Image (tube, rainbow, N blue to C red; front, side):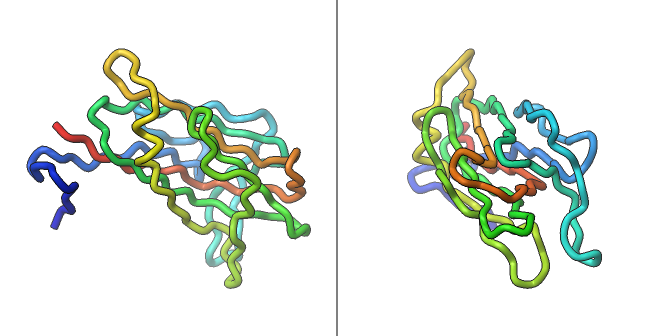
Length: 170
């Protein structure tokens, strides 16, 4: 059963996704998102052999910039990131910005105790979505993810997917 947004007609609400799969080479992505990735970022399988998953590894200071172009009718959004820290040090600090709005700053992604490097975390972006700009009838914004060396990060950061789920009202 489809969920409803309060105050809307369920027949006019559409579920959508803009996906970036960093587990492969080349990186696969939805046509509603473009990306720029820092030089020196490499792909590797991470985790214990039976649970290994492909990811791109970001050294401290490395970044990925994702530019989204969604319909102006986008009403809600949720970000799901498959990621995790690597290395021998206990520090990996990431920063995530949506345009000039900080989603997380000097955030230490959780480590898994069961040998899995990649964990999936989600953030509700609905309140940020309303502040994004409209260009040519599209809601256009930039999502910026950095392994923040300036904030003290010493571990590599593994990123396997960036998924943006959003609803539009037609």
